[in-house]
Length: 387
Figure 1 (cartoon, rainbow, N blue to C red):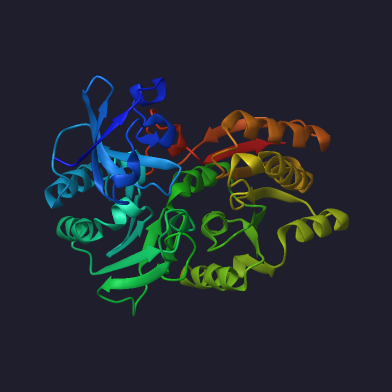
Figure 2: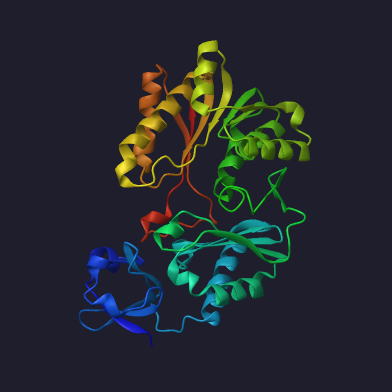
């Protein structure tokens, strides 16, 4: 059906991984067009799957299916409909969620987030870029959003040789979407906000935070839109939200005003490390500290450096807690696994001279499904610790 590629089977591929690396391919790839669809066979000429090819990426082929079928609009309609059905079963009543999570939904290279009646799509790979037209048509047919935004500004696109762009391809955003999480409303800006506009992956973790806090003082570090801190402010906490980005703090203030919570919130624009050092020096303590930093580790080569950064942050956060206070700490770095993450917290507590009790360990929400055969789909760690 498509150009044929022969691979060497490996235990990883036999276990169901969707990525095929260049050193696992026998075929001379010089004649295969970048971005083209390919049928993959093993050395015994047994069909293995169909995917798309990019010689400029470390991952030469990303598989789309293990069935012999056309990769056309009907194919995407089936895949997207299955993803939406799963979300509506797992998250009944939700109008905002991740619709498609790349490999987790068997559509590698595609991210789609639904914010009320606005759909934001990210195309991350050359193969999916070639299929953008029919892919968008399929999304539109199933969800019929009033607005569709292409948020193609992820750095991963540069690794695929793709340009960066952000554009609205359906409707307009004269009025930004407003979503509801728990009992809080958030305004989302799909054009200028981080990622696709909001961090949906932490929704369940923020819900959990409300069970551990019923007031007192709270520190929300790397607050961005205030999604963590405002949930606790609604619960009666007095919250200080800190971020080094003026745009982020304006966003958080807007959301505080939207929920009439500005009187329970303070906003500080400062480098997080500098702010925490000052608070420790001044002897200020909090009942609850939220630590949700950006990914410190983008590659395996940065793991040692990233561990030090996470350790320093968690050490200072623990020092800022009253006895019996709670730390909600997270990492979205895939290369920092669960065991390493918990070791960081344990080491930080030891160095702070505090005992740490793990109240709960959590990960990303069910709309970011982890495919066990593709461990890279699990990236988010979140721990609630009492010290």
